[in-house]
Length: 125
Image 1 (spheres, rainbow, N blue to C red):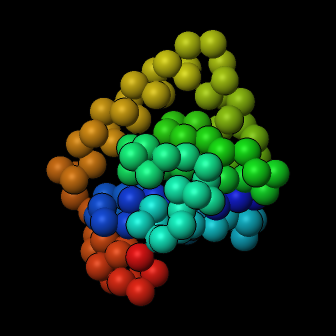
Image 2 (image 1 turned 30 degrees about the vertical axis):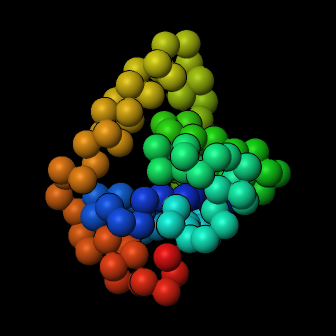
């Protein structure tokens, strides 16, 4: 599985999580881009109003995932195994993971992080 993880480049916690995921990447198939990059909503086929609500995953086949499913897809790509996505699809796990993801996403600017990606790379955003 390969694809692109779209993350909030203005969020320090999101940037730190993205950096950690890139360190885990054993496959070299994981790419990341900030949600703030022009044209991202159109590329993903979602409305600009929905863009900043969650992380997004665009896999090589064109399939788009959001939220906890996107996180699991990115981890699967980085580790080179579909196991995280399989666990996500166990009955009941989707609900639990999405609830936790939603809470974290709603409070993401309160968590410690690092220099936000868009602050360190303004041209990319």
